[in-house]
Length: 225
Image (cartoon, rainbow, N blue to C red; front, side, top):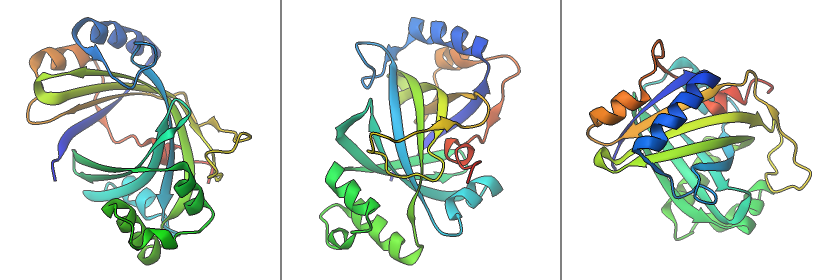
């Protein structure tokens, strides 16, 4: 299992403009962007236990933690992924598996027997933890992302904003689904890399007065319940 470095920084709207210009000068737009731009929309459905294990571990700063989510991009439900994100201090690992819209709908409806002997190990793991930890769909998180890549160091730089929460609603496919802003209009810079962070990227993303933070979109979206 390969872990990557990941740091998050809360930035201002003026920082966003500055960083966007810098990143466009030295990096390539991420392949998930729309029409050749680095920008795209993300909708994620997060799972948690009845006692909010994932949320509590994040708030208390547990050194070792994990969370499950289902995610798709740009309102395209033909490509959906189940993801498990594991974190040890500032090192992160993400495992994923394709999952269909019908399979997600079955989980939302509580029909999970098909998961027991599924060929995808991550599906089976989610099922086991739904049984042993009581994991259930908890809330939907929406946001806009601008993503950039830099090949040396396998660097990925993202600017996330317009974070919205579905509060306690979990039917992520409903045409009537409504989200609301998740508190303040927070803007997040995320910097991810493998073994080393090239100096050019280090210089590009440096913003005076900005320090790493433990900000969590999921935690921010749970402020209403």
